[in-house]
Length: 294
Image (cartoon, rainbow, N blue to C red; front, side, top):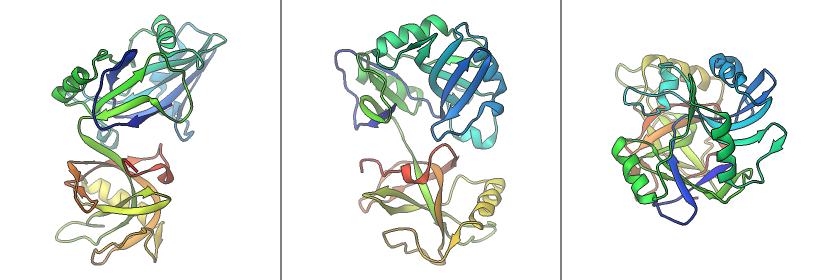
C-alpha cells in the first residue's frame, strides 16, 4: 500500500499521523523460523540483513507478514537515505503494519485492528522498531516533524483496509523536498573532477520522460567512479528525454537507473533548484518514477 502526496497537512476524524522514514520499503514474511525480507520490486534482501531476519524469526507467531521501512539513523536519530550509500551505521526495521498473523489475513480489517495485532506481537527490541506516532492533529504532527528535521509525515485513515497500490487512505506530506528521478545522461567532467560532471535527470509524465534538470553535487570520488562504470554499459546515441536537453557535450544513457535527489523547489520552467545527489535506488524501477503532481 502506497501513500499519495498532498500539499499540506490536515486533521480529520479517524486519521492518525506517523513519522515518515527515509529508507527502503520492505515486507517481512515469517513462517516457522524461516524469514524473507522482500523489497517493493521483489528483491530478496534477507541475506543482507541477517540480524533483522533473526530478530523477526524470534517473534512468537508461527506465520507473520509485516510491512515496514529499512532505515539507518544519523547522530540526531533521524533516518537518512544517503547513509546507505556511505555504508554507515547499523540497519533497523521500522514496522508500521501487520498484514497476516497465525492464519488470520488482516488486510480486509481496518488499520486500527491491524495496529492492535502489531502491538500485541511485536515489541521494540534490537533492530526491530515500531513506527513513531505523531498524534491525530495533522498540523501539529507536521510542525513537530519540520522542527526535528524529519522528511515529513504519513497520514492514515484508521478505518481503511490494506490495498495494493497507491491509495488516498494513506497520504504523505513532505517537510523538505526529496524524490526519485531517472538518470537519462551525464555531462563531461570539468576541472579536476573525473568521470563526469553532472547527471541529467528526468521523470515520467503522461508516459514520456521529461527533463527536469541536472545535479552536479553530492558525489565523492568513489560514487563518481561507480556511477560512470554503470553508465558505460548503458550509453545510447539519442536522447531518452521527450524535451530538449541544452547541455554542451551531453552523453545519453538508457533510462534505467534511479537516483534519490534532494532539492529546494521547482523553478518556473519546471527544473529542480539546488539539487543534491543522495544515492541510487535499486528498489524502484525507472518507469515508476513520476513527476510529483503529474
